[in-house]
Length: 163
Image 1 (cartoon, rainbow, N blue to C red):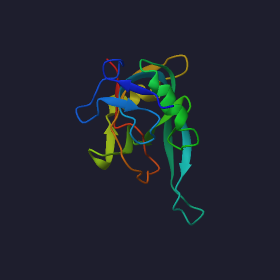
Image 2: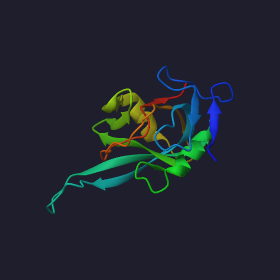
Image 3: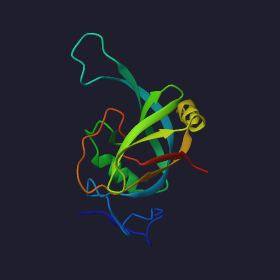
């Protein structure tokens, strides 16, 4: 059975291009804005296209969610189990490049687009720990069909420190 939320019954904030209902049972159509509290962890990703012993590696950042103001986020993350970019209790933010976090996101509105989190916000995310979590505001725009994600992909279009 699909979990269906309407704009009236949900604390989800709608993006102007978002539909008025949210079906988190649908893998691609989940959309909306939520606040999540948690902390950053990192893994090293090797270049998938590498054919030699000397390869570039990237630091890929995961965000472990400990609280959210939208319970449907838990359902969305649970449905991503086995996905490289999200799963139960976490989602990928992107890759650290220099002093900022970069990521790609696919949506019906923008297609596949690259984003950068500014240095100040990136630093705040990087400083988060289990004992010092941070609150983020994340927005996922609708995506009606699958797109090939890059190694620095995030399911979320915007990632900001919540006010």
